[in-house]
Image (cartoon, rainbow, N blue to C red; front, side):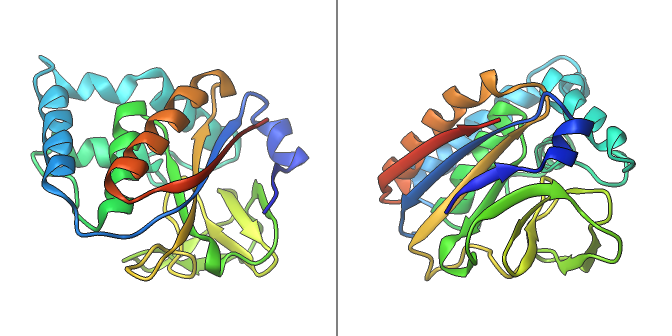
Length: 219
């Protein structure tokens, strides 16, 4: 699977960079040690004197600016990292799905970067990160159809299947998933992505039986 960034998206968001991690995995029930890491992460956010200031972090601000450049209202279409942080600030915990999804959510909050997660058994051919077109939609995970026009989207031979806002049910990770692609999205340059690819690989190896890792920075 080859991942590329469309030139039109790059023109509107010139600093954009992606961090790709693929791995063989096993979707276990969330282990207690991972729950503890998630709890510590929540506590670190909440102990900030004004936790809402974290929503002005550079990675969050650059994601909002990228959405504005594409003509989307970032208050209506939030990056997944911002949505998770808002959930924690409001007093709710991380959602607990499975060991794979929970690793991705933890890294998203730690890095402040949106992270897409895809079951490669359901990705058709190569993947292009592009701007969603008029009339394009898909069913988001646990949500209604998402209007993709103007959103940055990941698309394969079958069409769009993911975005930094919400991924689709078509390529979502389930208990039967064996190989995944996780993609970190940075609107402020690729330099920050590599360390988080390493962090994600470490978590997947520790908690989701991750092996046969491949990582790549895409600009």
